[in-house]
Length: 422
Image (cartoon, one colour):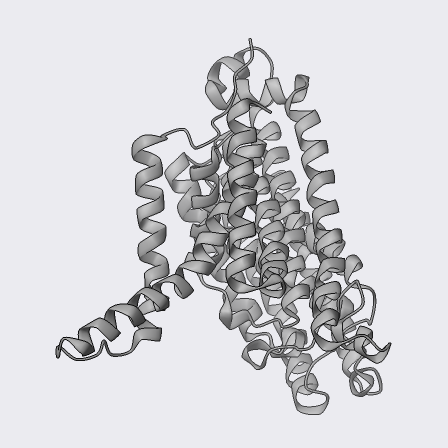
């Protein structure tokens, strides 16, 4: 790390100390856990954008998949579902999906070209979709009517975090096969569309995610405050020590991910990726498989996003597909990487911490400022400021806009720009 990095991280530490003094240790630990999760997500985006120049605007979809994975894995088992015909009906739906995919794959292997091949491919997709829907629709209706939803597996949430990374990697692999051949702006548009499709699916699959009814509470991988209270610990101490335990796991995951990514970045693999990013035509002419290498970046970055999304849902103990918004779960992460410094892993992590703290505390600061101004205005006879809470919540976007504007104006390569070593 450079002297500038040490100085900025020192100032970031001082900022957290100040927030802790102003808001209390319990709120600061809450803020730290979520900041670690967002820093991991920002690191994933830095792999895609900073290493490969890939415009990925499907971050929200990756986070939702990670959240759905840990919800299904760690939620308590639903005996009503397993005692009904739901598992058998879902098995038929899975079999129908497998038959549909096999049909599409088989038609794609037929040695026919031209319009006939296009017609056969379209027909196979339509037939596969019809086969799947004839099985999943009755199964979904039955499950929602009888047991409500499938429930979880009752496993440790860490398994859900791993599954979240795997599902995000699978989605990235599928998206990459379809979209990575597109031009940069078209890639961004395509990933936005896929992200919205994922949100619509998870929001309306009540039989799997309960949709807008939400799933809560979702267990932690470490003891909950209630567990510590049952062991005789005071209420305030229980919340503090429980969050510190969760924080230790989140910090360990981020440190391990940073270590592995940094090693790869400084090795031959990283140099090849930077060469492809800077001039993919020259890299391709030297025998590098540009599309395959970009696919690697896309999948690797998505793994970290899926894990980060699962960590957030576990910590918040609630999965609500309707609560995901592009500004909170896509645009915010892009601001973290842009402000921190694309191409610099430490910059992405720094931006993750800084922007999330600014995002979360700007509401409280705005409320304090508006309340003070309202008090002065009342004393002067001008009247109080109405709806202070709603106005203060809107200041988040305003503050975020100021931060990114100032950063781009004075630090176009980020606060911690990429260091190019010869």
